[in-house]
Length: 109
Image 1 (cartoon, one colour):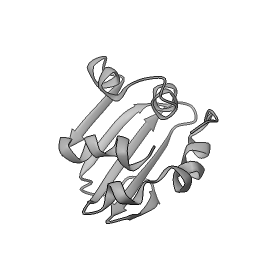
Image 2: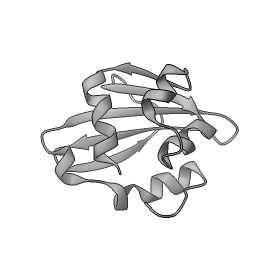
Image 3: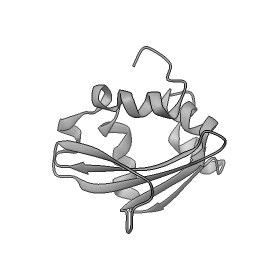
Image 4: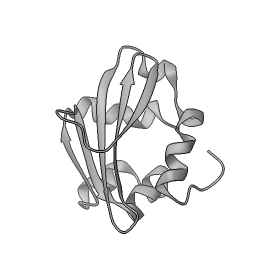
């Protein structure tokens, strides 16, 4: 990704271009994002064996839930903040299947 993404909506619109189908082969998981802040958003990404869809709002029983603030989310997406650093500094809360959570970096570049 060469251009910085400056809003959650830009990130969502860029997902088709950043999606790596081969990295999601064999994965069937729902990734819930809860992004807090003035321009926050809640959405769920359903990755299913080489394809994905984005569902608006909170979904029941996601495999992984990520919760963060808008600023940290944009820094994560733009590779200005590493996921492990965000977790250790409590900028990113992760609940659910940690193995599936770790796959997100490879599924969306």
